[in-house]
Length: 106
Length: 121
Image (cartoon, rainbow over the protein chains, first blue to last red):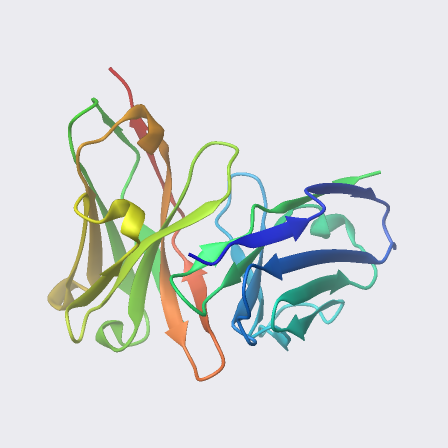
C-alpha cells in the first residue's frame, strides 16, 4: 500500500495566520490526492480534490498544490471555524489516508 | 443533492458480526460507488472497501479481506457493510461515503454521519 505521511501532526495558530500542511506519498501518485476537514464528532468533509481543485462551497482561503509525491494544503487566513483536523487521501491505488493534522487555537 | 444516512450505534461481543446500513437519497444510487471508511477512537481514517451497485462489483482492502462483506440493494438505495469475527480493535466509527471517480482522481463526497460500533464483552 502507498503510505501517506502528513506533517506536522499538530500545530497551534492564531486567527488570520497562514497555515500550510504537507502530505508526502511513498511513491508517485500523480494528482490523485484529496484533502478533508474533520471537526470533533463529525464526518469528514471534502475540501480539495485532484490535488488542487476546490470543492464547490468551500471558501477560497483553502487551496491545494503539488503532484507526484509532495502536496500541500494552505489556509491563507485562518478563521475560527477552521480549527479542526485535516486529512490527506491518495486515490492512486487502494485508497489510503494520512494520519491527520490537528489545527488548534494558539 | 446526495445524502447518506446510516443506521444507529451498535454494541457487539467479541467474535460476533455487525451489519451497518447506509441509505442514499438524491441522485441515482446505482450510478456511483459507495465506500466504507472507519476511524478508531482518536485515530485516523482507514478505507475498508467499496461497491459499485449497478455492477455489483466489490473491492476490499487487503487487511479486511475475508472478514468484510459489502452489498447493495438498488431497490431501496441502501448499501450494507458486514464485518465478522469482531475484536476490541474493531471498535470504531464506521462511515459510508460516495466514491466519485474522474480521470484525475477519486474522492469521497458526501459522507454518512457515521455509526459507532463498540466491541466489548
